[in-house]
Length: 94
Image 1: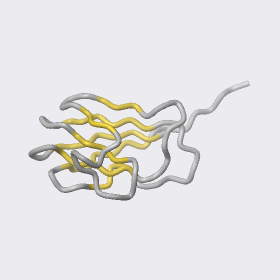
Image 2: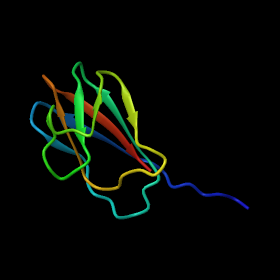
Image 3: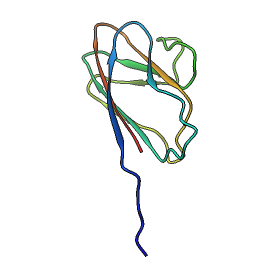
Image 4: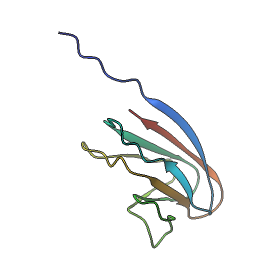
């Protein structure tokens, strides 16, 4: 028996001190999500439709670090905001 895994979807999301959508809600079969904070500042992620901020966040991702969602990933909307400056959230959803 061959096990077929879906291909990942890669995206580059511009980030700044204004909250942005990192992942749109996905009602499909999401097996995993990964975010690489390719910036020089902390990236705050909110697992919600509300705007992310330093005081309204589910997790913080250090500059240059990667956050991997749990084995049963959240498939709702994820917003993100940087503590300062601009950068890129490099994402994978599979």
